[in-house]
Every structure is written in C-alpha cells, then in structure tokens.
Image (cartoon, rainbow, N blue to C red; front, side, top):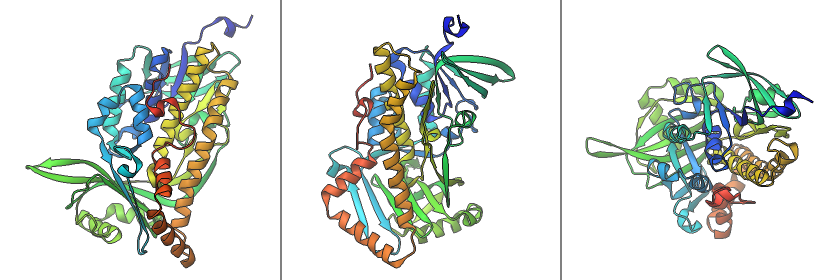
Length: 421
C-alpha cells in the first residue's frame, strides 16, 4: 500500500501567503474546525509585510457583509470610514456622475480602512483560533502534488521541513511562487502607468464622499479616511491613488510637499478646498494579470495570485474577498458531503463559480482605463455624454452601484452576511 494512503496529512489546508486575503480566508474557515497553517514570508505587522503597510483599502458593502459573517465586523466598524457617495468626473470635460448610498438603499456604498488596522484585527482573530498555526517568517522552497496530498518544503529561519496538506491555497500575490512552481499559465498586460499613493489633508471636510477623477494620465482617486484631531481641530484626510506615467513618478516622489500639493490641486480642482498636507509617498506599477486555470488537484488560487487588476473603482481587494467567500462555501459543502476538499472536482466548483465574476470585473476595470485615457476627441465627447446620461438614469446608476458594492451576479452566502456551516 502507498505510504501516502495510510498517513494523515499534517494539515487540512496550507495557506501560502498571510496578507489580507490569506488571513481573511483562515478567519472565514473557522466554523469548519479544519486544521490550518498560514505560511508567510514576513513577520505579521512588520514594515516589510506589504499587505499591512500605511496604505488604506476600500471595502465594498459586500465585503463588509463577508466580515459580518466571519463575526469580526464589530471589531472593524469603528476603524472604518463609511463612503456614502461617490463623485465620478472627467478632468477638462463636462460629464459627471454621482452615486449615493441612499439611492442604493444601504447605509454605505463601502468603507475605507487603514491596512495596518485591518491587519491587526485579522492577526488578533487568528491568534485566538487554536486550529490555525502561523508559520512565519518562512519561505516555501518547493511544492509537490500527489494523489493523496500536497507537500511543501518550508524554510523557517534556516530550519528546513516538509509539510503535507489535503489542500494548498495560494494567496501569495500577483507574482505567485506557487503558480509559477506549478507552471500554471498567466497573461500580463502592462498599462504603462504607475500608481502614486499617499494620504492627504484638505481644508474642507470630506462629508464621507469618495472621488474618482479621470485625467490624461489615468484615474485619480480620493477615498475619505477617519479624520485626525490636532489641538482640538478636526483635520480631514483622504487616501490618494494618483495614476501617473512611469516617467513622471520619480519627479513627483521627489517634489517638495508644497509643490506636490500644488500639482495635485491643479489636477483635481478645488471641490475640497485647499490640499494642505501630504504624507509619505510611494508607488507601484500597474498591470492586469489574468490566470485562466485557477485550480489543480489539491491547489486553488485566490486574490492577486488568481487575478490582478488596475486599482480604478477599487475592485481588486473586494474581488479577492469574494474568492474567500466562495471557496469557504464550496469547502463547507464538500465537508458536509464527506468529500475530499482537495479533490479536483470539488475545486472546479470554486473555479467555475468565480470565472464570471473575475471576467466581468476585469473587463469593467480594464474598459474604464482604456476609454478614459483615449485621447481621440470623439471618444472624449462620448464619455462625457455617457457620464451625464448615467447621472440622470437611476436604474443604470443602481446597476453601477450594485457592481461596485460586489452584489451583482451569484452572491455567496457570506456576502449576504450569513455564516457558512
């Protein structure tokens, strides 16, 4: 008899990557009483852990429901700033559209939370779960898949060991090591754009409004954050994502604060009064990564390992959280049927369910970028008319809001705020 048949794997699930998506999956699976390990290259909450840095993330309303089903929204609610409206405009042109939570019948279209604070809540939740082992800092050096289990070679502080699991979940980002090791194909498009990110303060309050302004170099997004209180005065804050041409980035990173704010003011306008302060600036190149095959026997990809999007409309993280919700539901159903959670037929249910959402959101964000950076005059006129028309047709606005909230298509149980069983 094959020795693999008689040996129980070390874990039910090994999650490779302990960023926000990987950590969220481990929290989501808590009701299933599975033995789980997270293998993460960096120590949690360390400066080198990119998922939990100084940036902020926009949580869609559907993502809030997923956190509710996990039982941790109550820990996040006071850390997050609600977005009750979104103002969409095209710089230099007359078109504009406004979305509101009131029109959509919800208390908020989404929420903005600082990555570090979200990371702290996820880490605290995981540390209280006796079924989850955190293996970090550690690197996966090799992976081998056989009929009965998956094996990974791990280097943890110079200690080399092999771990086995019924299922490997790759949540290790757009340059996924697992995806590359298993020769799972992917296609990458370089947008020829770079996102400059920072936090900025304004003289006028944000009133819980987010702004998406399309410019010649790409979209400029301002997301409302929790304000600071300094010397008894409330200081409004926004998370800034400013799309620039790659050749502009070094110059903009090197500008004095005053000159940077001046250029931002010129690009955005004075709808928020004056930009008065800017925090630390950083940047990253923008790409679209598509992965046609997202499961193999005993392997599933989630988050940026399965798809990487342009940040326009803030869809990437929320698409990954729907991966978490669907995979959790599929695994729960498999366990109820006493099926092997690593079996390819089980994992294909996850892949098939997610395919339409992945394709439609990728097409939506990619289309926005291409249309709003097209310099042809007829295209500019058409998009201005489209924005204006959209603003006067409530059913179309409701459809757009539903998409941005992550509530279109087949909605998983957790995105309805219900627990998996």
